[in-house]
Image 1 (cartoon, rainbow, N blue to C red):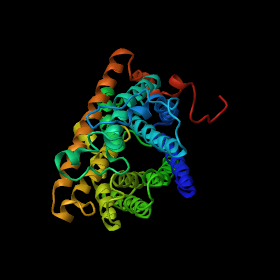
Image 2 (cartoon, one colour):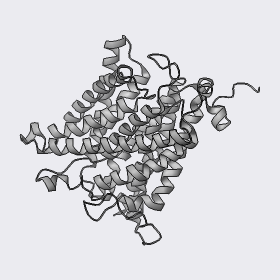
Image 3 (cartoon, rainbow, N blue to C red):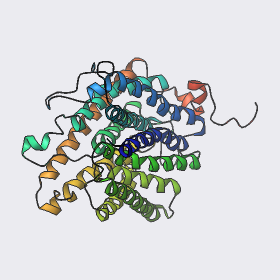
Length: 401
């Protein structure tokens, strides 16, 4: 790795780590004023816990020596091997993905989760679900070799459509079912308390996504970095337009939170496909994802589950959209480009497998916590706002009293 690549690796890693505080801002503005500390602390706590777990066991678990292995050796730690600068940076870059994947799930249980219970869930889910999935997709596991074993093209997931987006969205759905609905759950009842805070978080997330998608190029030949950053921007911008258009049609007004959510939906969708689409097709994908996710967030009202901050509607639906879009339009390999359905087949198999495993893992871990120490705060604390009860702090001290 030359000095330019080394510099980009450090910058990109810092950008992705910065996305987790950005997520805390994004989520924090969307909840009640008296729950903002609770919401942001779930991201902060996850950053610390999953980061430490990665150093201790996650790095080893996320790399396998055979596609048949469920996960790698958790005892392959930094103390046993002298690693180069390249290897250390690559490992920290991978750790930043583990952190934000787990942090994303917290949006599904906003306003009603105990912090201690969340921390237990975050640690256990990282170990039993995220680290193995990372090994499957990027660490030499069965998904990385799926195409080879079936005589088909390899699965494409450049930056985390499977390991990050579908994993977090599926787990979020499971936790929303475990914790149940918020008190007074209904359309229009729970409004963001601080839209500017959410937009600050959105800005940090959009900024960090260029490191998220293009950071891995530092560990390669940098041959696709221009395409990746162009596609990342194009999909995010197009999805913003798509979401605002649907809001205008449905509600008569385009909102700032909707615009930010649309951009995130587009960025989610381009994550797996950023290096394997032409820029015009990235714009099409963004537009499709913005429209699809704008409608998908209504599913929680139709189906009766309370995904507080629309992790399912944006990250699961957006991730699936990006993964399946590759099956049709991936450069040289998509069904509509090559006439061969092989790419679509492996994309579907991988997406279904990760979705099912992440959902069942989160459902099991969340259910055990709920049935033992309890995952949800008492309804009185939920109504009053859980910051003072859980953390002893107020997000906004407006007077000396």
